[in-house]
Image (cartoon, rainbow, N blue to C red; front, side):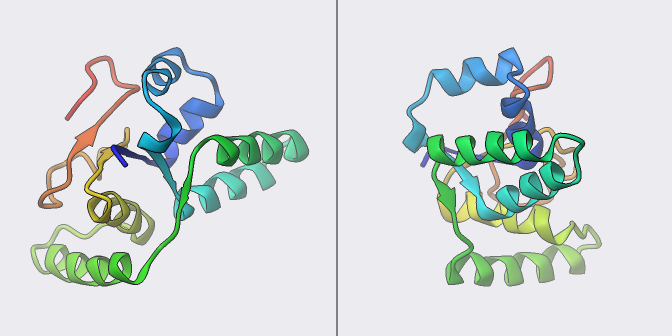
Length: 138
């Protein structure tokens, strides 16, 4: 696994945004993973949309292309340690953001996100790229 994508990148992919499609097209499907937490957020968004059936179908098609990465015990343990450490440093993050980041860390993958809270450098060892910003990367 080379990359783990965050929800905002998955949405950009579903919206067929050229810069994200171009990056994914350069990779094999096995190099990009979709955390189950991202899947949950995508399905929630689809269920709250005006076009529920078509949006759920789009999300399902995405899961046929990209492997869905479960939250495993090592990810849960990493989450607990990381949340305690960054909370102690006064830099707390949302639970879903941390689980997604821990999924990337556990897979030794780069997290692809456009989320400023995950690009701020507060999570030691987390490699981040932004495929939707005008200047991709950290």
